[in-house]
Image 1 (cartoon, one colour):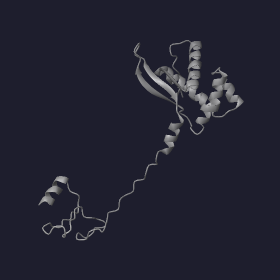
Image 2 (cartoon, one colour):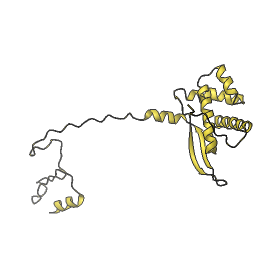
Image 3 (cartoon, one colour):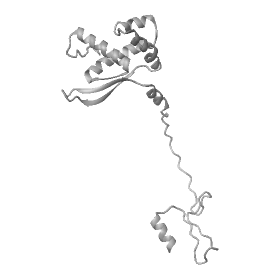
Image 4 (cartoon, rainbow, N blue to C red):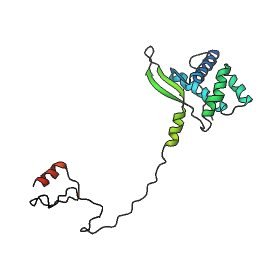
Length: 185
């Protein structure tokens, strides 16, 4: 199968493209967020995610493989001590691309390429599990003349206050206008 064999050459010779990849991946690890074009971000993302997968297990072998791409020792150290352990539970997808819009000079699509933060990891865990839908059972019908004991009358006056006022009990809440008309009658 031919799946994912090709790549975007980004209009550069091989040596220029390799230098671009090294520089951008190093900047991404150093600053954890870079602003670039969409085409470059998609290519850099592939390289960066492979490096983070290596950094999840700190071994001499993995450090040497990463050192072929990233030349700065302090950046390699940051990758293996901070970035890699952050994603130990995550099976992949360590970066995200946020679209910014078009660049004013040449209308290239600009994006922000960044590593996911710890807040995103905790937010995913805090999502409640989907509840199972259960079929509702038909309720038993109650006789009409019986009223539940928990209902309280909405308006109630005592006969001792005014002998001409009738005692009014409302079972259902009614609009304020209708309620005012009933009380004034």
